Length: 473
Ligand code: FAD
Image (tube, rainbow, N blue to C red; front, side, top):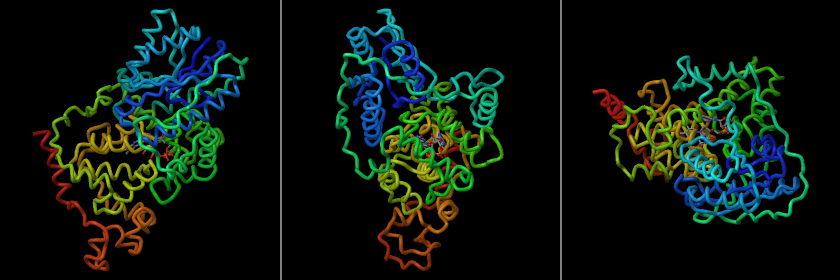
């Protein structure tokens, strides 16, 4: 008997390890619920709830294939090797299959499980599935990991021209086994119940992921390059929660984009090419996590920024977290995050830069807040995005690039539609005033139920530049 160990690959179609397990003999599936470990990783309640709801869907899909889904509970990943061995002995498992995960704790967990099983002659295989390319296989001429995105992307493009990854079907139904599936819990211990609005925004199920992908590819992908930066439009795919949970695969996304491009890789459509480039950003940050494992341990990618004099100001941090900074685009974005579990990419960059530069607050506090609230929270992408924004990461542009939240707001939300949606207290303002109400001559002082700006943009910008410049002194 073979065992497929589900982690962040919660689907039956195009699942490399599940396909390998099912092609070698009868298969049973397993998932571990590990609340203490998830809390330590700052996983958001809404993310775990989506994953839990997906387990319900998955269990039903697996039942049609006669694959039972075992669910085991333990607090920490360090408990998994012994539990796994027990399960293997109980069900006479000869081989465990799983799809590789790349952050430090995930790799330590898998090595410990493999070693424990090996002692009892039980096989363990982990497969490339989450990514298009094995980390360590896309390297510079001197065989090291790329540190900047541009050349990494070009190397990936070349590899895609050489060979496209194929899609795998779901396993065929197997003969019924005398093993019952375990019930999926109704709640994950230690995590707050999730707002029904968030549940509604992000329905579980592979079909839901495909529908979203199809709709994006049919309606929006060709305009992606021109529309993706406008948060009031549905210009991006909103597939990140589904990709993070593995409800859809990266190959399914790539093939859908290729279909829209009539099979032509990096053809004439800017929209399709730009979207595939974003998929490669996801790939890039996962490779960074393997090549530079310090980033999984709360360390900056650029070691010289370790000594940066971050301000310790919990009140300021709280105002940012709660969307009370007095900068409408930032506050609207932070409320979008709290109320939907998701934030638009451009806004993630703007609020991250505001926290780490204008407020000069340690990017790790922002990274943690994001993880605690994002339904798509992913260590590699989140850490990569935060370090890029804070100029401690892989960005090749110097630290003095600091977005101005007011001019950004005027550019990406020109008629204030996005701000009006999330800050109803400003909804009555005209299109000009809404970006900086306290500077507007048309807004009477004291009439707004909205705070004044918490910092002066020019002086806080100078302060950030001085703090970075001091690192060189
Ligand atoms: P689309 O624009 O449709 O892109 C398609 C897919 O490509 C996304 O679903 C995602 O998987 C991937 N992708 C797109 N942009 C990026 C990027 N810059 N980096 C890595 N992958 C990307 N993404 C996460 O999935 N999880 C996170 O925890 C996360 N945290 C972030 C934190 C910060 C500070 C920043 C600046 C970015 C972060 N991102 C994160 C990347 C990006 O913001 C989201 O992937 C994107 O907003 C998801 O929306 P979408 O699915 O509509 O993306």
